[in-house]
Image (cartoon, rainbow, N blue to C red; front, side, top):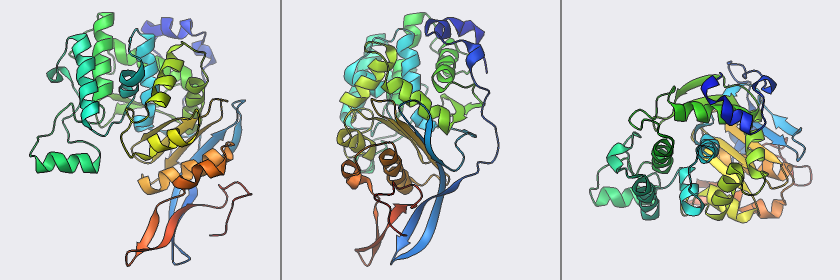
Length: 352
């Protein structure tokens, strides 16, 4: 997929479109077992998926499953979308830029932040084109239900991104009404950035749950993009996005969210989750991981990602809180969701 009208964005970064790898294959992914559901000492279930671990030099340090086939990153693509908007002039930093890359919980601070972005651009909630929804976090959603508050575009977890998209359109003189159209200048600019940062052409374009275009890349490419954002030179659009998310992880997610806790636990870590069991993360030295759980199970995403980060060189002691949720029997823990032994560093591997 090539977008000649945005060639200047790629040229400015020094990336030649001819250096891009071919789009990843569209095929049934060849996933492998990545996590076991253990109950009473027995494997009750198996989560399949794929895992990519890149070293500081960008080389594949470890992998399981199929890291080269096309997959949808879902919201794990948001840091790349945010980079594209900053390149196009979006002047946000700090909390508001973190919110622009967020899958937020719908807390009042998230709604207030999205309103601030809209106010800066002279738009209102009615100008957003994401789908109305209740807040993502169960506890926040429960409050809304008890208070009979209706679904809204502002409460939907992607509202920060959509508000930033409108702001970017204003700054560039692009029409705001159809900003989600795949051939809109904003979306072609985002596509160029996705291709540049992943190092490969986009395999497929569809529509994400919020209504924005969604681009299929490989897990390998997604990990490479995260590493490039996490290691970018100070002051660059990539570094601004990474700094904002690392400094304000709860604005990119929410209170009590595992991805925010992971960034708090591991110094310098940049991390973003996505629906359908996607997780990407990168360290300041350029090591990076990308995870896809085949059945989309959220319970396997974090323990598998934590094991992959240990493979990438993170001290396992920093990751003990992310080992996996317990399986209960009679209200007591009788097992857990555990990464497969092949994924664990040998020093901490345990038999299933």
